[in-house]
Image 1: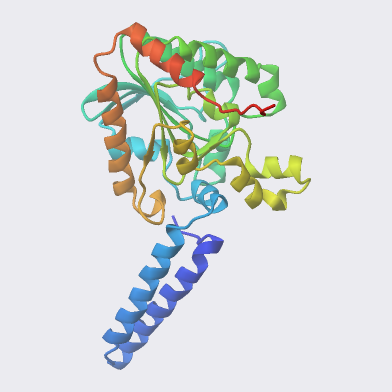
Image 2: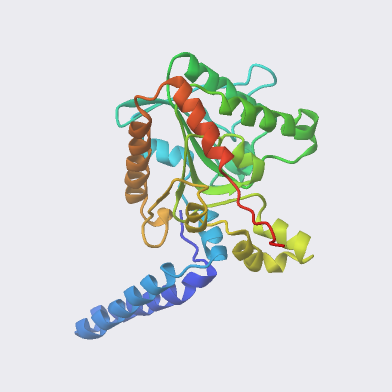
Length: 321
C-alpha cells in the first residue's frame, strides 16, 4: 500500500523528492550530478538517523498506528510455517478481530492468538478495527485451554487500541470476559509468550497478555489508556495527547526499564512497515529464544514464575517522618 509520511517524516520525504527530481532532470539532459546526488543522499541518511534515533513517545505511538504497519496475519505469512485457524467461542459465535489457531514457528508447534486490524474500510469493519468483542476473548481462552490439554505452548500477538466498548459488548459482558482471562491465564500449566506488535491498549491488550514472557517491538506501545483518552481526562482536550504520551511512559524502552516487558525487539530504522522481512526475522528469533528458555520447566514452575512476574509489577515510595 502507499506509504503516507507521518508529520515528523515530511522533511526526509521532501529531501528524497528533491534528490529524485535532480536525478530525473540530469538523466534527461545527460548531466553528471553524481557528486551532488551523493551529498544529498548523505544528508538524507544523516537526517533519517537523527530523526528515528530520537523519537518522542508520541511519534512512536504514531508509528505503532501506521496503516502500513504489519499486523498479525502479515507476520503469520512471513515467519510461521503453518497456520490452522480455529473459530468460535462455543457460546455466542466467532470474532474476526481475534484470530487464533495452531501454528508452527521454527519447527515448533504453538497455539497462536492475537488481534487483527484491517487495511481498508471493508476489512476494518470485518475486523472491528482490532477491537475484540467478548466472544473474541472467550475464543482465545478456549484455544488456550485446548493448548494446555495437549501440552502446546501459547503465543499471543497483541495489537489493539482496546476491547470494543459498544453496547453489544457490554450486553455480552466484555469486562467479565477479560477479567476471566486474567484469572485463568495465570493458572495455565504451559509456557505463554506475549508480544506487543503495535498498539497495546488497556484491558483489551492484557486480556491475552498474562504471560511468562512479555516482549515488545521497538515502536509499539503498551498503556492503561490511550494518550488521547488520558489528555481528555487530565487536560480536558485531546490536543495534549503528545504530553500525555510522554507522561504515561508507554514506550518499549520505558517499560523495559520498569520491568514490565522482558525484551525490546529491534525494528528497521524507520519502522517495521518499511521492511517486513527484517522485522519478521527479529520477531521470530526473539519468540524462539524465549520459548527455548522456558523449555524444561515443570508445569508448577511455569505457573509459579508467571505469578511471581506479575506480583513484582508496580513501584511505590513512602514519605519519611
